[in-house]
Image (cartoon, rainbow, N blue to C red; front, top):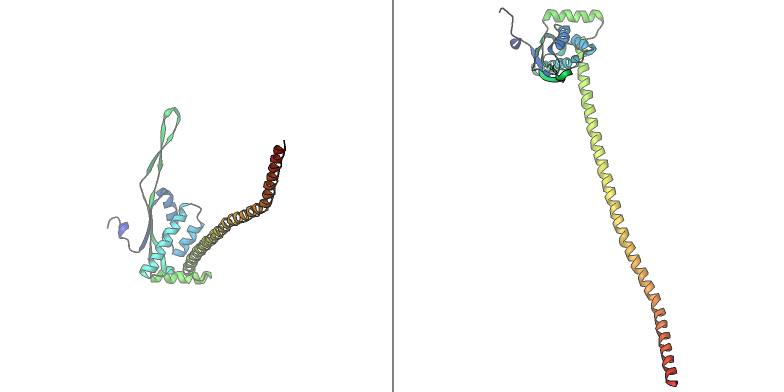
Length: 234
């Protein structure tokens, strides 16, 4: 073919991120650094890169490695970045007010990032193993794969811990609400007891007032009788 293999027909396992809020130019600057590298070396380059777009490309590369491991049963230490490119996505148009009632267009670029990983050839794999043995690095690709698996395990365990803490807090809040309802019931019982005591006190006062009222009525009757007697004498 005159222009080589088409991008959508290149062999290997791929991963794609669409509508990334970055320009394709910025993504291509980072993709040029990892093209053709073993995945272990590519991961190191992306982790040390200072560009923000490198974080997105790192996730895309890890996704491609996971696809190769789980879908095609290819070990991570036998993979390399065979192709990587960034296509331009739709551009968002915005406007910025300027002097004299004018406006300037703002173009917010987006891009689609694609990374393809393939298995190293036998010769390249043997050369990689010999370089690792000579440099003293114990399985650079394998170490990167293990480190990635450890990160995934730590992330899952952290999520499980957060979920357990949330459930525990929910149960604690539920117990607190139950205690509050119990206290509220006690508060409702207390006024009833006070009413009973008030009624008993009123009854006691009524009993004490009955003899006094009887004596007062007797004194009034005696006074009336004395007044009638005086009237008859007159």
